[in-house]
Length: 266
Image 1 (cartoon, rainbow, N blue to C red):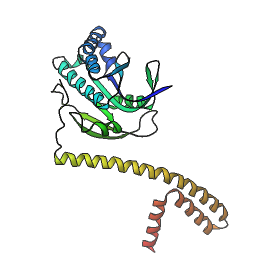
Image 2: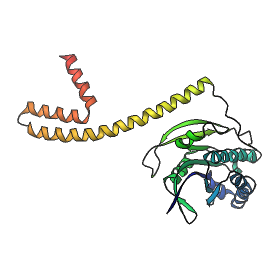
Image 3: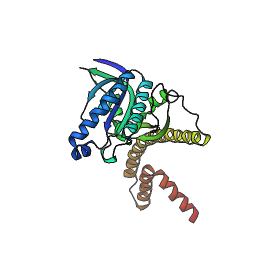
Image 4: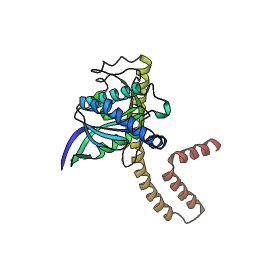
């Protein structure tokens, strides 16, 4: 079984079923035109390998994460330009997700969590948007001609851990025709906002880890409290103590509040 580290790009057409229902032949022709004139040449120009095509999407492998993001940015800018004179109901818009991960290669197809995360990011992306995973963002944030907006954590189907996502801020009015421009310096307020959002996401992950640990501890305390309660059921006073033990094990914050109220009224 062959494996390798790669950047995986997943793309699909927004509202493809609706477009096909309204104009099957026209939609097919327009998508074929976009692929021939823009999408396929851009992928090839950035060293991408088209792994598979579906009716409305594609899965593409890149050896370089920078090339993967630059390809996506160029495609989305090009699509915006090509759609500018097209009636809104007939426009073909893409959403793109990109991830980096260790993949399994079998019969020219690719598999693994790295692929699955790219697909989930694509499903989260907005029309004309590009969403990337945090591990990929960390490698490209200062190397491509666009800025990124933190989009927080997302729990997605068949992925056990939260996916931390970033959205590429692509200017739809400019078309990339060469190497990406150097990213502009963030305004102080925007830089502070992004730093705060990243800090918030990190804090959220830490809290989740603490809650997971507390859940195990609470389960153990529940067992201890249940055993203690069975031992002190001799009279009403003991029954009250047993109930307190159970409450303390299940909801320590509420137990503290009750304790504080009793002391304030006594």
